[in-house]
Length: 400
Image (cartoon, rainbow, N blue to C red; front, side, top):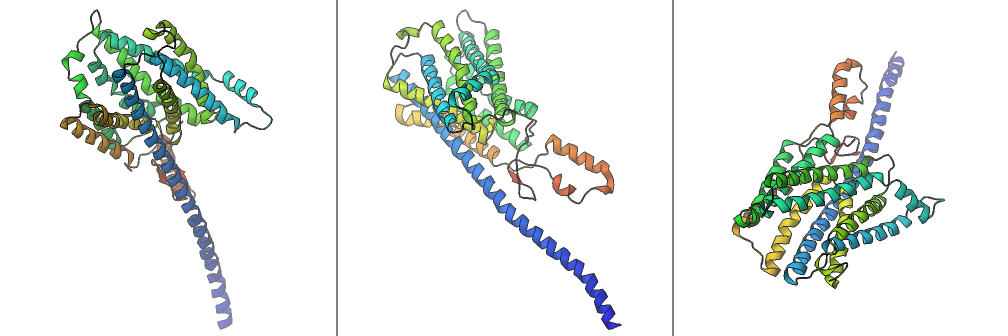
């Protein structure tokens, strides 16, 4: 009898032991996967921060050197020619990078020909950028630089709105507050421009309504263009690389800058006149900025790119004050501190937000009753910006 009991007990205990061992093996697998996921997230996050910091520095250096070139040295080259040369540099550099990633059985000529034939989406973006340049010109012909500066700061909010509509991202209220605080901080920081009554008057023969409408359309197009570019880079079915998209965009921008140069007759120095070594440096910096913007969108998103360019306003003003005697009042220092705090509040906010797809999955779960699989709870966890699920996989903001 005792022998039979021991046999029964062993038969009962054995499956539990197997289950414990199986679970232990699963836990070991999860423990192995989680560090890999954490390491991957840390690597991507580090790359993103490095790219955004370099973009901020590039924007600051470009602004300072351009002001020194045309404001102090009084150099008279055409700014559109500088941008055109920058696009040529981008085309050459992107083509060189593409040569290292050509698919088997293809040569560089056939690959570039394929990219040119598939450039429609980037040509649309180039046309939008061209329209924005024209609208800026129309706006500044009809309203003062101060009013233009005030309206231009709303690019932060238009980018976030289009991100919510097109990419279906959901931002926490903390991030919306951070963006509004950022916009107000930049407005306060640029007060020396827009608070000067001499810069706010309507230009002679201008129309304030036309100028205001032009700058508002430009701001709206700016937000749309940023999100459109991000959507093409991250979700396009063709899955072209970042250098291939840069090549297409630079190629589409080339005829637009040619048009501006011809319409201005080369400006006061004539066609490609007045060029100096500093002008070549600015062209190279401009090309680097275009490449960095694409990288910042690839590793981050359009909002973070906007934050980096906004931070560049503060950094360039500090450098301008240090090296060229530009204004830096106590109010500007306070406003700059607010901008930095707002950027940190946005970047380090960890408030969980459900994506539409997750909300739908949770609704299906509530209606499906008790027949759910045991894994449903793990699969329907809300996805947050830059968090890890229980299975060790990296999740971020969803995009469609």
